[in-house]
Image 1 (spheres, rainbow over the protein chains, first blue to last red):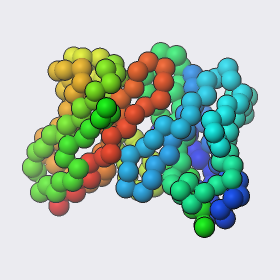
Image 2 (cartoon, chains in turn purple, green; image 1 turned 90 degrees about the vertical axis):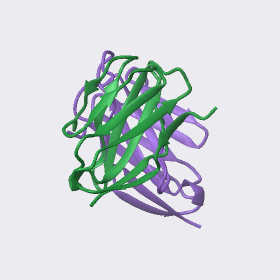
Image 3 (cartoon, chains in turn orange, blue; image 1 turned 90 degrees about the horizontal axis):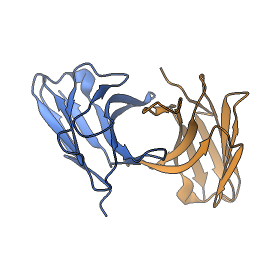
Image 4 (tube, rainbow over the protein chains, first blue to last red; image 1 turned 60 degrees about the horizontal axis):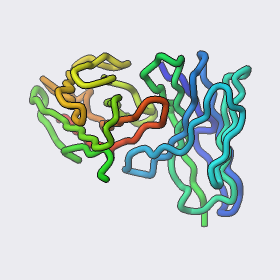
Length: 112
Length: 111
C-alpha cells in the first residue's frame, strides 16, 4: 500500500510564484524524503528530513514535518520553468526498515 | 562517477519471453532496489537487497526474480513476461541513512 499521499495531484503556477505540495503518511516514520522526476527521467533526491526534525532548508526548498499530524510539506520558492516536474514524497518507516514507500506524486507545471 | 546505470533503456518483449535487466552502481552502496512505475500508481517496490548475496521481496514481487552476486550489480529477471509487466523499471541504491540514487529507467513493453 502507498504510505505517502501527495496533495494536490497537479499544480500549475506562474514563474516566480511559490509552490506548496503536501504529503500525508499512515504509520510512524524514521525519515521522510522528497524526490523530483522530470518527464521520462529517473528520480532525483531533493531532501531528507528525520522524524526528530521539524523543518529543513536546501536552497529554494523548504520542507516541514509534523509527526503529530503525519504530514509533510514541500515549499519551492520563486519557482522557475525548470522546476516543472513531478514531486514525490517517500517515507522510511522505523530505524530498521530498509524500504522506502513512495506516494503517487504531484505534477507541478511552472508557466513562464 | 556514473552513479546508477541501467541496461537496457528500452525493450519490447513478446508474451512468454524472458529477459534480465541489469543495474550497476559504482558508489559502493550496500542497499539496492528495483521499483516499477505505472501511470497513476507511483513507484512500487519489487525486490531489494541489503548487501551482496542477499535479496528480499517487496510489495509486488510476483513474476520477478533477482540476484546480487556482486555488490555493485543487482539483476532483475522476468522468466515469462506478461502484458501486466509493461512498465518503467527503476533501479536505485543508497548508503545507510541517506537518500536514494536512481537510474534513468528501463521502459519495457510486453506485447
